[in-house]
Image 1 (cartoon, rainbow, N blue to C red):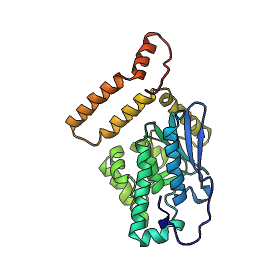
Image 2 (cartoon, rainbow, N blue to C red):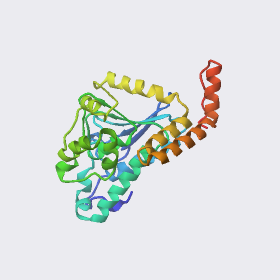
Image 3 (cartoon, rainbow, N blue to C red):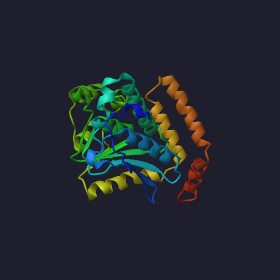
Image 4 (tube, rainbow, N blue to C red):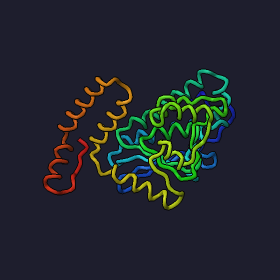
Length: 276
């Protein structure tokens, strides 16, 4: 990520702004760790987030990737203290920030593994873009989730115009993006932005485990191919999608995991996936 859009004012170098955890059951958690700034996105955090995403993508032991924020908040958008000067006054640096953010969030959207955003507190602006880049969303009942950019006469450059309407349709997308309104976790479930919500604390922690359980026991190869086909399913005409579906079916059915899945069913045992 280009350093030229960092504010020219002295910025204290932070460490450990992204934390990577991998549980024995294959659930990988990537933590945003700037709780004193509500996990606002700084240039360093974005660099480290992209590195963590790359690491999770290559980690064979990571079967599902959960994005969370320390300090009981997900992410309150860009750190304007660090970015306000160059981003607002230099078009090239504003463009670079949007490009780098979009690249990182696209990696999350296109990751071969299932991704889950778990939101407590605020997920607004850039945090909202991270949230909608994940395959699934779960949230605390009292979370505050929304685009928010328009409240500051800003515009989100990392996914809202092409991801949000796919989740909730154009009218609801305009309602969120043109008013800057925030939704609770329970409202996000009603709107189709979240898959599930629960009270903060033990209930939310259990929800994460319960939600990930049916994802981490599947064939990684079939998971990737199915996710890819679904993502592409929003991008093409019907005839192209029929071709894509047929070709994907052929590829998946000739995989080692498909053979193992059928054999395990016939032998009445649990399958052992190789990811091939």
